[in-house]
Length: 362
Length: 131
Image (cartoon, rainbow over all chains, first blue to last red):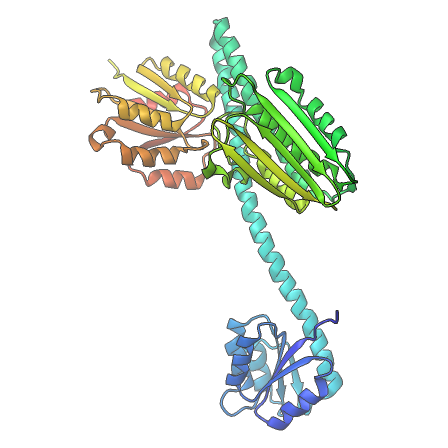
């Protein structure tokens, strides 16, 4: 595809100048012309992609400086260049101070001068707009960081202040049963802080990391995750089913998939209903040429429909269980986005949850 | 003799709940202590409970899943009859004093104090003595 021509506007009250300018530059640039400031303004409104504006200084109704002064507030992005036949120092000063012009060219203009002004101006335009976009990104990132710092300090301090309080009690207590009970509660708090730190670490790895695309062996991956979660030891009452149908080579990033499946699996294992006699978790993977569908299903506590959106937000916890850091599903969503995939949830409170993840082939 | 009060402690952390209960007992000025990990259950409890001539000190954590401390206050103001509300002295708890939380807490006349966790006996005694 050919690169689109740079869009330029030339404003001058003398028709001949407009024709001459257009004739000289229409091969290289997309030149729009206007015979008055008013006409020029409506063209700018119509064409937000105008990048460079030339304007004659001496025009009957509005001067070039006045025109630039007017548009520089509303349309700060296009680069402004003033053309004039009379070199008078006053208008130069005004052009710079009031019209914020980038270049000042004398008439009759020479083609190479105009061309070099356009090229220079365009470079300046690109730098400026990229800078503005970067600034905006940074502002968003900063705001997120503030929120993040607040939540992290809160969520980390929470368990730790609890531990300090517990230690105070233990120091005074002679009651062994009480101390043992406290130790159990302390363990939960310490584990929560630990999980949070682990998840933050994962979050940063996720954002820094470059994807490493390789063929995925789902069977091996699942075995690894089951071992990692120590399913038999930690969840002896849960029946775990696993099914992998892999017809074709499936290429993706192993670490991302590991993070996604591991979070879904550990949630499914963790949020079981105590009274359910036949607790189960099932993982099924169908992978082929077009992509992979991963389904993690449980018959645990379930998630109310009103939380379906919020569960993927940072620090959201849909359960007052202390073990949740409010980070797991946020990381899952992030990783899925990195792989251009999608996640769906089907759930009923009291009967279980099914997460379905689809990941395209890389 | 120092006046005694009923206490309701709402905190999603079981450990903080346990510690808080202990600290409240240690003040020697509690008639009763109820601990909840879920604010909505505490609200139910308050609604069901008949009016007592003794006042109740409520200590509620701000950042909790599902129903936050502020949600609790909103629901309390809306669902609990006004004459009953006067019997409850609400105090907010947080493990980090966040400026915007502090400002927000001041917009509720029913909030007595804002306490930084962990709760200590002296902090509670100070509140009780000022009542």
